[in-house]
Image 1 (cartoon, helix red, strand yellow):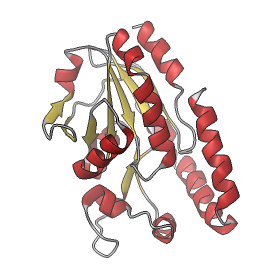
Image 2 (cartoon, rainbow, N blue to C red):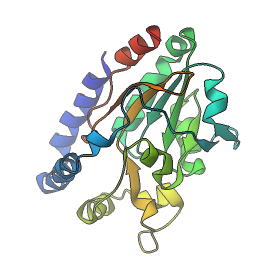
Image 3 (tube, rainbow, N blue to C red):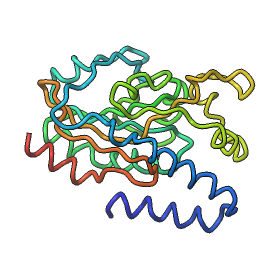
Image 4 (cartoon, rainbow, N blue to C red):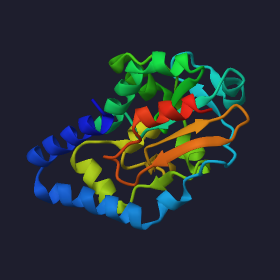
Length: 223
């Protein structure tokens, strides 16, 4: 089943269960994010990929992008957090496709602003075989052109549905949250060639829409 069909089923279920006034806040936040022009800032194919050194939740070690690219092309999935059902569905889909990625000589990593502890919970809960890297403050996401700060109305919305993003991202409470702890990435996927150029990039202001894995696998075929 295409990934988008799975995500659309989540949307249908959410619209059936969540109060209209809460849905309206989320819908407006999505419109506002799109209108900010963030999709136009996403690094395009042909651009140089930003280098990174981030902590791997599984090993606790620092993972360098240069070391990964020395082994093969790299697929990078930026996701918001374990609290997002769309994100975990996407990660589980890629879990089932790891043999396809490896057969093409590529590596797959997922990056989020979550703490390494939260990334480790994600690994364990969803039995993910690939590295989950922690990007504090969404700094690397910003370098890829996909980071934003959750606006005040949407912060209150998350608090009302008991999603504590500052805790997830930085171990903080709502009361002592820093601005950086409210930073999130637009969910996006990049394919990086071994010469560090971007071969594929796609992200959407609407968190309910994700790049289709089949398209990314085709990109890997053509490298």
